[in-house]
Length: 415
Image (cartoon, rainbow, N blue to C red):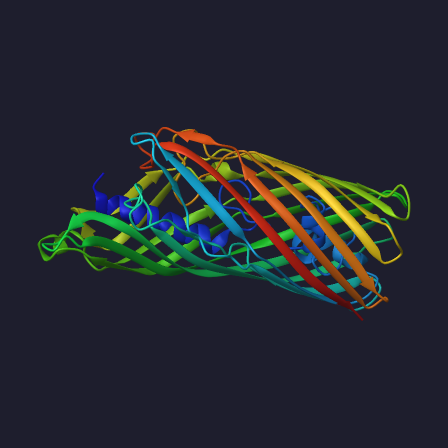
């Protein structure tokens, strides 16, 4: 495959990743930072009654809220990726700026059975920047991206035991990606290519909450698969004039299948002070077999490019707990294991994915009955993983090791 085709394929991957990820610094291109209480409890959240953030975690649980409420929160992502070259044995590190994903939820109890809500959250809000002269600059120099998802939701309490809910999701985002081009002008200046555009997609979120008894609760949710579509993305290149005809300014179209997520969980409250939670997510990554896009102007004699991805379905296992040491002050902790959906040979500089362990702690403080303040601290450790590029993958060969530290805080108001 020619470099120009490879540039387009990698750029589109990053763009669509930015525009549609539904869930948290997890396998593939998921990001899951949608609730501070849940983060503090190992990212569990499908199986216990919560505040308005149930809009995301389990729409069926929203009807169990005792009052209407609003939640505003955000996280601060400090991430680092290291790459050990298989050819030069040189170590490179990212210089990524801080990411700031946020979540805002509002839920209103229409009556004792029906609750309506709206969630606005950023399923991906980080950036990746490698040094301009790093060994893989022809694969990626930097990517800046932002995503916002809007989810109106309705929840219905059938009886004291069972409640259900459903939400419609519209996601949109933008991205700018830069890669080096292996050409220099007569003065030795490097060449670069930048691709930018917007993408959007729709989906839905279903959930049910079952109170088995006063202590045991079971929850299930299903976030649908969707396709994020890029229309009329734009390209620009800075290359020597002699090569300009091979790197045209043009538009492109593409789509990326985003996986469904099936979540099952249970929570158990042995005492008034202690809550335990466990959850498993099954993510339908196998839909992402290849990345195909079409561009308006011929590039290297072709008007389409196909790049293999060959993702596989994966699991995420989570456990967490919460303990109120006083009437108003809670301590939280949890851990999760996230199985990578990326098969050997298909890792990329945008998503150097591997099996991941996440460790979290959290605090909660209630001010009267109207205000809740929640804070969390999440440590994400992706296992070191060697990548030997598959012939049809167009990736880098070498060893990747990634991690992140993510503090966050939210405030909830009940009325």
